[in-house]
Length: 210
Image (tube, rainbow, N blue to C red; front, top):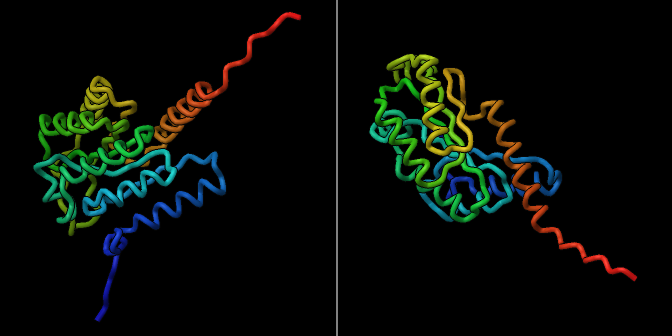
């Protein structure tokens, strides 16, 4: 008998491995900006907190699709509201964290469903969103329902910006690890750290004339 295990099969869904790796990276090279893309840890908020508090800069967890399509598009264990709770809790335990998620279009979603998903994400203060075209990896996977036009992707980018996302990458070839997004997010982080350093500097003593 062959037994195949994944990280999700561990008691902590691998959260200790994630956290330990991030801490070691930061210890060796504190200047490195770390983004961690995790699963939903089966909704266990203590595992979410463990990773969020490990020292990383960007906490990423992908919604993948709209609520009604979640049971058909994602792993059967994945839940739309559970994923929202993961992103919300990461921000709750470390408010300075940048949170990030990704949605695939072309799975059969309706415009109003995409808009509602974006609104749900902003309600929990998710900072960054990427939207890309779903591509069928193999014939065993779900068929592409629609090839979304570049103009429609541009539309969703404008909608996302109007809703208050700090960064939106939207295009047929965009993925959650979009390079332009990584550059932009790194600038947000560096600016934020610069501002924190400036506010934490002690006030200079007034000069006194002899």
